[in-house]
Image (cartoon, rainbow, N blue to C red; front, side):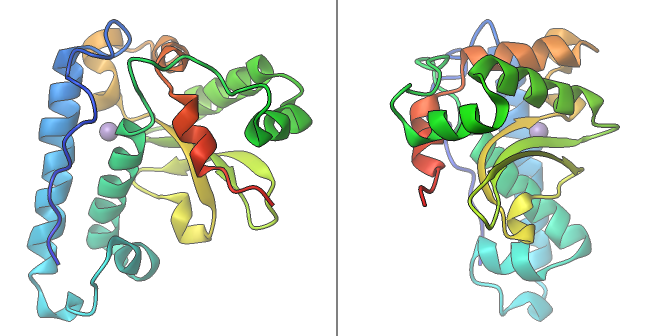
Length: 197
Ligand code: MN
């Protein structure tokens, strides 16, 4: 199998001023492209010929192949969570809205907790809103390239906490970067990922 770079679903300047065109061009065109190139190079090895899908890799691979492939998956999921029409918030009549309020009382409290988890992640990684096997929502951190799919969770939303995601625009202010992302999260997309039970 071979992985190709997926085009962004918006123009590079569409998420400004929250993510600059410069950051997006580096993040998508250089960082994600490198993870793709690394994954494809590793997959040339015959010992991986049983892997036919990204899921095969994420559930079975280890080490450098897992790290690179998981980074490809995480980045595509991340880039496809935003839209210039974002910042809309969950629909008050959606099941996801109800589930978030059942757990965190308000959307604002959820967002604060989510950002705090991103800020407190030591080093590089990701912060996620996931649905666990029992259907309940949870916020969790993953280190480096780890993806919650490997642990049987359903990801609904993620923010990239690697410095390459924000350093050009925000330097060391990770909290400001993460807080600003709420202005571009497209909740219509997040709602579609939520599995109602
Ligand atoms: Mn990244």
